[in-house]
Image (cartoon, rainbow over all chains, first blue to last red; front, side, top):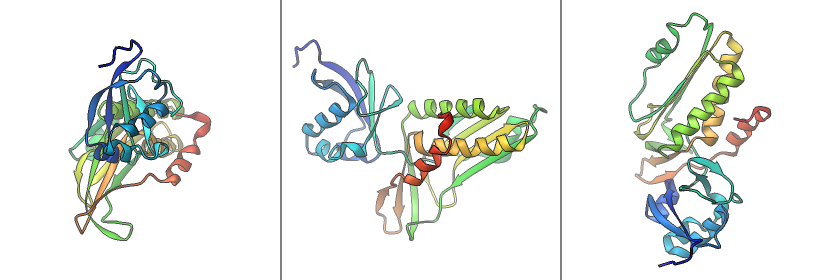
Length: 92
Length: 154
């Protein structure tokens, strides 16, 4: 249990091979206070278990969205409600 | 202007008629259909599955469509992208751009596909003849194609 007032809870969703490696399509995550940016979050994810370590082994290979908008590694998580992690897109 | 993300196939003629029959300001209609090829990297393709990000996909497609309408002064437009299990020969995507004149309609179709392929959150997984599934890698050539339009980012 975190009692830190700066810890934030967000919904994190995973897609394609990120989803397969993590083993979940979505979950509620309590983000530690020192995790400020999307890049910080991707690196922190590596520490959460073997599936996460595999999925986030190369953070540069993963794209992210905050509340359904594409964002960059340096984007602040801020008041995000939902964060998506996924490979570069391949539709069309 | 409208976008759809659906499992069902689409009917090109019906979609074109629905967009253009009542609008005599339209002088040009460009359409693009993307289909599932029967081979991938020299191997036979058994099937393909398309995953997407519900909510974000529709928002991204609408944003891309609005950018094309503004940039090319489209009279009407339509994007349909299929999801789920698809077989070789199946349709994947339909883009329709209607304008008073030809060049804007054709360019808008090209622009819409370049942005769709690099920004709309879809992912393809191919299953080969041996039953082995693999996620399709993004192509740098798609990013290069999109950057042609850079002066007017979507």
